[in-house]
Length: 535
Image 1 (spheres, one colour):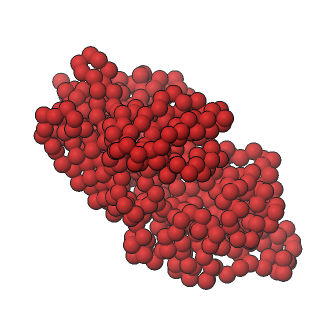
Image 2: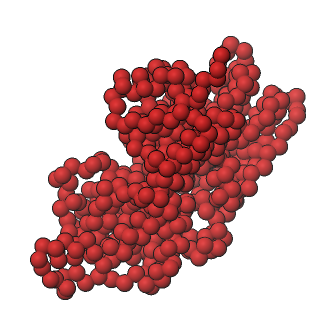
Image 3: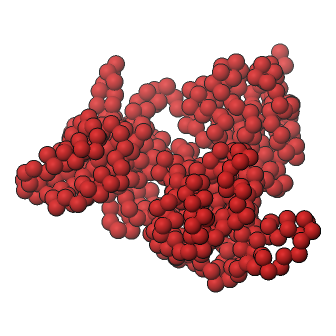
């Protein structure tokens, strides 16, 4: 019986030249776009691979109809249109091209920056309407001005490099970039509020997360100098659009250039679109011929290599593990991600080193997936492209040294995972272990925070508080939370010695707002209070 050829279906308008690696490998490649769900399901019959951009939705229902599907390739950066957990559960590898739009988005940011400074679109429109209004469109020079950058990933760094060529001074905020790294790039690393205060122009290049949504909002505008100009080519929602409208109306913001919106396309009556001070483009950051060909070629090469040899590059979901390994390691993988996310919210300066120590049954396996999971949790809000496969690479890009050790000990008192995160200002330790055996649920717990022994389940919303060990603190904290309608579900306490310092991990049912945190921190007995969110 002859071998069945490998079949690849292309469902979106992907660059034809970018598909060449698949055709050259002898695969059968069929491209049809704009199909309905039923048409796509029929077209995918017996297919091994599917290539999409952002239009086609790869849902669990679709994957259920294509049992032969082994890999989905997204010719672009995000995978929002692909149900990645469902793909992982079905053994389908999901790939993307995370670096394909770095140059083109950086260039578009600079294009908007220059257009904003010199009123290029407004002047063009005026001239084409038959007017000659030279005095109306007097701009400002970029040379000698200060560009503030929020987020120094690949795109942020690309913008900085190009802006330096325009003679601009660069200040930036990124808690995961060490000051010496920034200096090497001729960038002055500053706290976020200082970047807001110093910037003549401000551009944002972070992923959109619960923490970064609205990061450029009313509170940020209140810290900026009069006449600042704002650029957003990253994600809609990073800039609070109502707050931006108010800041332009009040004169704090002289102008804004937006490539992305919270709702896309934005409604025709969007108030920002009616302002002459606002330049808008329809999400063109990645829209160049070179970028579209590049992401298609990258994904095609990755899919070809996986289907021919099993090699994995650019995967965004967990590589397959054997059944025995998966059963043993999955609780530790889950715990490690929670510990990493917890650590990310404990640190307050650039991470320089991560040290992980493993003990117990985990030492009988290769703990690399557990290490990746910790790093993915630690860096989750730093890079939109971090995942279990590329966590080591992103840590390396950030200059973070990662070391692991295995401790063979028969003592149950030794935690399964001990993490130590070294920052520019000190270090944080966090440990956890897994409870339950056999058919019982195996649940991860935190067992130590910075030397305080505490047993807490890492999930939901938590308040981590250090205080002086004196009578009445717990009562006052409980009263403040109660007055603010914050319900406590669990209260965990730990101390090193009587009358010294104590630590509390308080699990609550909802987020704790900034005013409540400020009131807690104002208590004389409270040394620090920090919200941790693991939802």
